[in-house]
Length: 259
Ligand SMILES: Nc1ncnc2c1ncn2[C@@H]1O[C@H](COP(=O)(O)OP(=O)(O)O)[C@@H](O)[C@H]1O
Ligand SMILES: [Mg+2]
Image 1: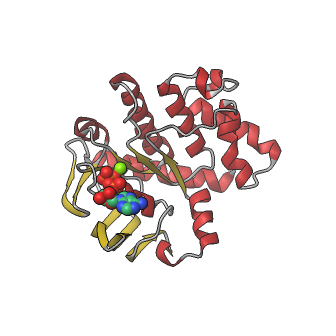
Image 2: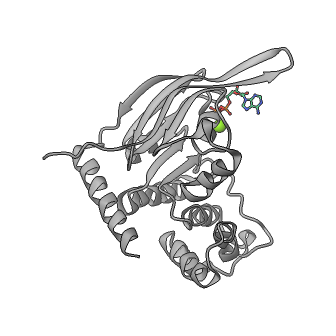
Image 3: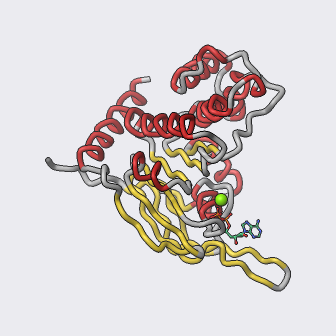
């Protein structure tokens, strides 16, 4: 089988992030270079304090490197203005965290609608997109519930719907299963893989659950003291999976062009 050369969706080159605490300097990320092909599901592992969250938040445009570059598509995030970085966060990426961060006074559908309001999507289009995002995470029947009326697994699926509603091409997840039991954690991973295969999304997930990463991700990168100490494909990352992903990306692009 011939495999089209995957486009490099994200390229981090020698990325460093220092934190200054009084006289002390913490090298939280200390020279990470990494290319992530479009449509790949990458898991980032490493012990607590190894720099995973710091690195992820720079990829997601929530923080900037002290030095180094992060190229996504044609943009170098390190050089974007604050306004363009905010636009990147709104339009290109979706993000979920360990804590679900749904606003407690709003219903699930209002929570999921928020990013659409921020990006000024027309009111008439919003309801359909919210409904579609909630269907994708199997929460269509829970749209009027408040977060306190949902289980932990449902809240995280709601957070996933909110992350998807702007149709980003990249999903960043920082320990998305950290507050969930194994059954609910697995449901989240199944959804992430579904987004990868049916929507062609690039997924970068921080986790400390290696068995889950082995089962669901294509590749495992391990950090220690802010540096990459290993980078290897998982056993199931067969070329067929990558080829399918590429085909799905093409379908998605064609769909996008039609709509
Ligand atoms: N805002 C901050 N100010 C100072 N030090 C920080 C800050 N955020 C993280 N660090 C430090 O940077 C290192 C990496 O942290 P982090 O990226 O959160 O690790 P991980 O997600 O792998 O547990 C740790 O030593 C942590 O204490
Ligand atoms: Mg962390």
